[in-house]
Image 1 (cartoon, helix red, strand yellow):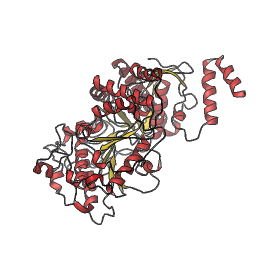
Image 2 (cartoon, rainbow, N blue to C red):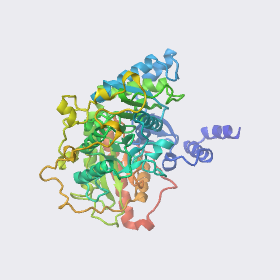
Image 3 (cartoon, one colour):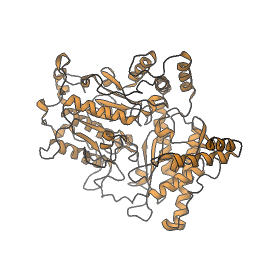
Image 4 (spheres, rainbow, N blue to C red):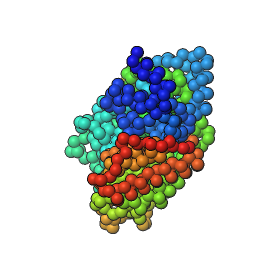
Length: 571
């Protein structure tokens, strides 16, 4: 009764009282595990497109987009119409795994968007409505299909918070997966960055797989993100992805692509793997595929479909509203070329940010792909060169641009889907196709062998030359490129930028190994005018933090935790 009376009193008081009251109750009632609410003390009551309005009347430009869930922004008309149509039709809202017209339409549209090498032989498994459960399903699938248990995963990865997904993430508390280096430029684990850093990462992976004394048995699968989002917005170079596809195909290791955040046009292609032209064996999909509502699936080659009925299930895998919203979203993105526009717009945004902020000592790198953009904040007094000029922050380029600095397209390049297989080329088989003779006949269940891999599950002989990177004249050379010494990450500055953005009516997320990367995930429908407003507010926020740092230093920097957003934002 006291809570009800309190709500009634606040409803008739100033908007600010309602806002503060809700936040106080959230703090008193909700789990201490809450995250976004701590850094973003807002109470959304209305939203449309890029814009959110809070209970206090303030308006914000939302570049968090539900952590990438809102491909079309908040309450897009086609999504609302699809949801209303289901509600008005009297159709059941939750149907477990039963077939319905809504579900059939969703699968049809989803398969229409898949890489050609997968679409013709795809199977789909509906999971519990979160990406982490889909990761669990993918890991369970490849273990069942191969009869093996180990998994290859990458440093910096984020695949979810359930036990199996967390075990293959970069923040895993225990070692349950073989961890491989993920290529990156600014903080290259080998100190060189660029194509040569990616080449070294690939060679390490190859050596680990082929060394009989590496301590890593032939695994059940490899899981990777084409762009690491939570890991700091790190786009994988296309040629490196092709290399991973060849390494796994040659050794009968299923490749799992986690496209939970990168999918549905976010990176400038419908699926991020489309940039490299590879065809994964399994794709993990969630977030935007539900059109802002909870939905998660895995899509995989029919060769892998060897598990028993009920091997993976979930009560809410039959969310009809999410399927309808997802169908509308997938179709709208495809029909309106939003993926291609995201690629062009994202490139312009990164170019503008580098021009505006590249000279600031606290900016380490601007990077990303499409509308998945990151700005890494670093300690101005740390080691390394200032973040400007060639070879430093201004060189922060997206994955596609790496091709212009030494990566020559491999045999599977040219936009074609499917991993290159030299044996397939010699035998006339379609690139990326596996030998059907290796599939268990008669629906026999048990350990699955890829035709492209060695028999008996042993490590196969591999020709390193066939999978090596080709270095064009002028590309990075190990003997001439100096080792990089990036400045220490500055999570305190990133948090200050996030607060300054909120004060200016801009919502951004933080990520990266040390939470020092300011992330932008705007909806694909963001207009040119809104883009300019986002860039202006972000640049102004970073410049304000840089001035404050120069004036006061790390010990005397002013804080804004008590009032992170004193004035209303505008559209």
